[in-house]
Image (cartoon, rainbow, N blue to C red; front, side):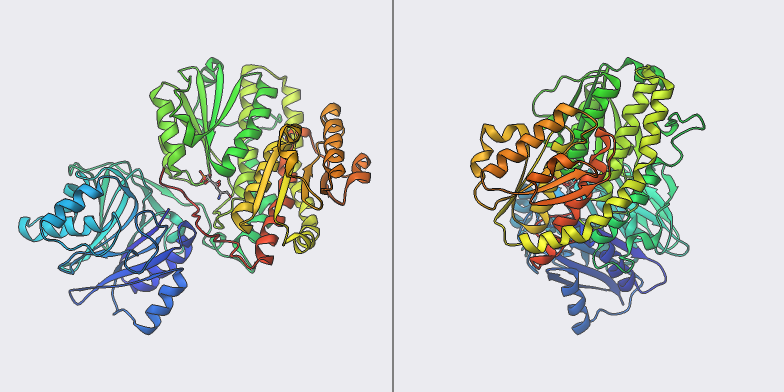
Length: 616
Ligand code: M6R
């Protein structure tokens, strides 16, 4: 949830850290802070609000020059977004500074212990206890900072990435992780710590994955990783393939606008290299053997938010192409209901960040029950694919805007690939059938590009509807998850009531919401795909219109049957029924962003949210 950055090297640490925080700000933006060590003194600055507030504080109250520093952008959990609760937190002796991502579950107990020992805590956060615990150990025991960190971590429960600096040890930054993300960047004469690689790819592409319950110490020239008991750990180093410029706005007004525009390429990149010369799928990287795939008797998809909507679409494709039963479950609910999963269950965990705590916990639970877990993920080196039996990466590139766009489309593509691959391996489809579907998929980047042409219409519509109290979305079959996704986008960006329904459910209750002028966005399936499905939704449009709704109809080119019932008609390219979400979602993304902009909201960083939700 929070963005974390640490640096030691030859450059001015403050500039490196603040630049890293700018790239991490999407993780949380309630407050920001930095600490450096200079001339044996620890100096911090922190401020409530976005990073820009901290930058203006640094302008009026500059920090001294330094080659070592840490920085944080916060998404508040314990304690409101105030200056006092902003990180770093400093020990009473002014020597230790700590930043943290996660939740320390036993902090109340530790806080009481510190208070009884006479320590005065100055914030409402769970983090501050760590600064005091480290400070209490260091002078009396002669331990170094990493040893002290290991000792403290053994006392903590919950999820945490911690990064600490000590004024008497001006060449070392120490960090620890449990259930919360942390990557190390290896440079030449400089090293980095960050919540994700975006923070340091402008400086180095060499990254090191940190395992669970590990402590890392970085100096200018050394990186030392151990477990919480000091046992040296083996590390996996990898090359970051993302381009530094991919995490810049590149001339667009918002990251979201850029990421929407990048979707044709993201879809194409996710397909790239996954089809052989015969038009069949090759997903060797998935690390599941054909024998294992043949043993499966059920698929369970777990995910949150937008990724859950991708999972809903996956169910339609999986069941249709493989004839395997598929359940889709919100990851946050999964492990609390005693789900029936076993060695013959394939669990697919979908996550852009690879760090969503709800998904991670659900996935661990599934593995404990013996299920095989396949991660569909966008972030190399993240925890979910690392802890899975198999992984299929989406190639969306860094997604910076909090609202997920290109990650969703690439998750859909990855789901289609997995479903089709399972069908291929299990012999549910003949080779020529597989290659025909692959051909359809390969044409989708072009169709996603075409649908971007609806953007101006969607923006004009948003200008008209910006004061609507509520917007409803309806769809059937794969149009239902698209309706849910359209509503989620509108809620998170435009802060307004928006709901998605299965069109057939309307008459069972929600139709009572309709009154004169309520905008209802209808996702119409292909008329050539499943005739009955199309027919039913045309009736649903008439039902809502008869009750005064203003109908905004998203229908394929050439579908004339909807024309008489559409107050606004948005045309999307014709495509196979199962693949329609790849095009039907795009106008809804543009609409939500335009509604937010029309209302004067921050499109990339909507209130109360964070890109990566690393708490349960
Ligand atoms: O990183 P993940 O894909 O696991 O994230 C899951 C959700 O938190 C995410 O999709 C969220 O719903 C987006 N902000 C929606 O736009």
